Amino acid sequence: MKAFTALTATELRLLLRDPASLFFMMAFPLMLLVLKRGDGDAVPGYLAMIVAIGGMGALPGIVASYRERKVLKRLATTPISPVLLLGAQLVAQVAAGLVGSVLLVAAAVAVFGAQAPGNVPVLAAAFLLCSVMVCSLGFVIAAVVRNTRGASLIGMLVMFPMIFLSGAAVPRKALPDSLRRIGDFLPLTPGVDALHVAWSGTAAVFPLLVLAGIIVVATAVATTLFRWE
Image 1: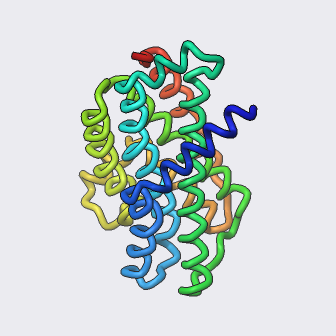
Image 2 (image 1 turned 90 degrees about the horizontal axis):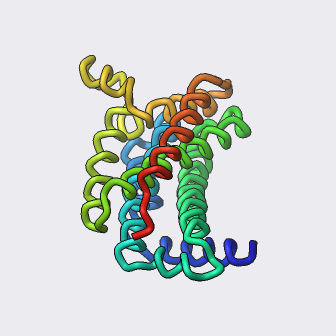
């Protein structure tokens, strides 16, 4: 447990020292909120965007770099399992996303006077499931694409269309019908839906179950395809 805690703390420090991660997970959503004049309805989508940036935009390249630099292979010969490092990266991504999300919610409520979340426990559950879901997809990308640059590129290519078509960056009602239909099948869409419902003060079980199902499937795929070297 001490080893895992130390690894997680190290991974989180490294993540927070990355200027790109700091900007896109913390400063960029705040900039969008300002442009939206503090529109509280946009906040749940921005929460999904924050975790997607970490889980699909950053995580695949980080994990691929560990494999490419033989970090995972070397750890396999020590008492510290490489699985612990991957778990620490998952926790670090969720924690970084939580920091960015708390800043965003605090700014929306305290600075712009947006309505506070109506159902905090369900919002927390939706946030956690959405975070783990995008990270599980990030691990699949890292498992399929073996080099650092390729994994980072594919992660970005998957992430950007997803945040726009799922309703994270812009409301889905503003999209043409054809793009909305595509968004119906994207894994981030149930995350956005669950966050919106919880923010409004109610609860919807189905989007949470979909997120859990995606986590199970993506984890199984990543576990099957992933190689330590």
